[in-house]
Amino acid sequence: MSDQGPQAAGEPGSLQLDHAEFAEGQPQRCAVCSQALAGSYYEVAGRVCCAACHQRLVGAFERRPGPAGFLRAAGAGLAAAVAGAGIYFGVSALTGYHFGLISILVGFLVGKAVHWGCGGHGGWSYQALAVALTYLAIVGTYVPAVYAAYQRVDAPSALLIAATVPLRGGVGILGLIVIAVGLYEAWQLNRRPRLQASGPHALTPAAWRR
Image (cartoon, rainbow, N blue to C red; front, side):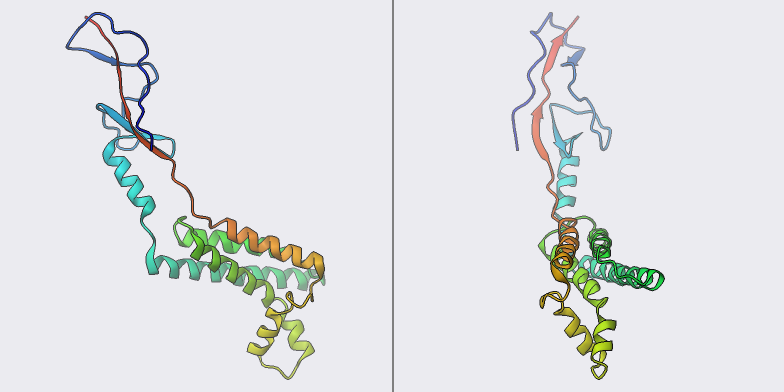
């Protein structure tokens, strides 16, 4: 955090104790609570605020969602994964073709759902969750083909075999690239954001006038 204040906009003029003006362009009120700023101010995510609001905003940003937030993110991500797989099967049923590019859409849907569930806090645990659910949704689309090829296997076994299809090269180079892009989409949507905060910055009286 920087503790250097803005420079005064000019030399002091004649003295008057009952009226003070701040340098041109300097903030005078907190953008959060609208209270008048006195002596100094802070900047949080581009917003000028007082010390109390600065502390509250930074505290809210650093507060983690906890187990309840993780469960909410997992539930939302799982619902998005099911919806993404449903879109894949729907398009395949209507067109008769298998579009691997839907994997990117699945990654986006799951990533956004997890991001919503964790309140935008992000972090490696939510990134891993989003990637796992995205991969599960993608390989789930191979289950019918696996089941048709191995009709004696049960559903869990079919899912396990399907999960290894990309690793065995069963989707080709282009298919692996598309899957990788989908997984990356889910990952990057849940990066932990950085809060730009600085202060305190001094409010410097520019002039005292009669």
